[in-house]
Image 1 (cartoon, rainbow, N blue to C red):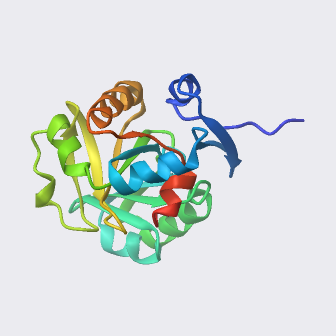
Image 2 (image 1 turned 90 degrees about the horizontal axis):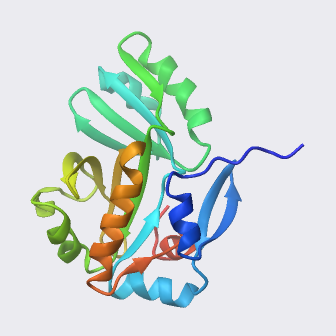
Length: 208
């Protein structure tokens, strides 16, 4: 019996662009587009756009302190005083969800939101220029490691700033807006010499 594979809502777009895929924790992950050197160059010199939808995502709403005390090194996006999204590697939500539920007790509502949000990582030195084409929101208002709600391409999004070796902004939207956002961001990236890339190129830049 074959193992079911979970796919990003952007999978058909990736196929049309010539992507190759790898299986990771039950997900079909975009590995690359055939030229790792060009993709890594996009990360270093312009802007790479990477589909990070397979990340595990846990939605926490309510009193956050106790619930988030057990997340460890998982990336936590505190969108407001009573709402946070916790991001893990693909499949990591299956381990993290019961831990957060136990720590939260009845003080917060904890939900597996992995399939509710599609995500893109925008990585590279041209990030400010690309964002100026996509939003009126000022990304300089967000400090490294912080998160907020902001419009990206006229779509309400949760954005997480993750400056590593180069600037990285992760953008998460409701899955029904994934295709529109993907096409809009790729068009903006293309104007500054950017390109789609896979997880291999993004991880080579220090992302995890």
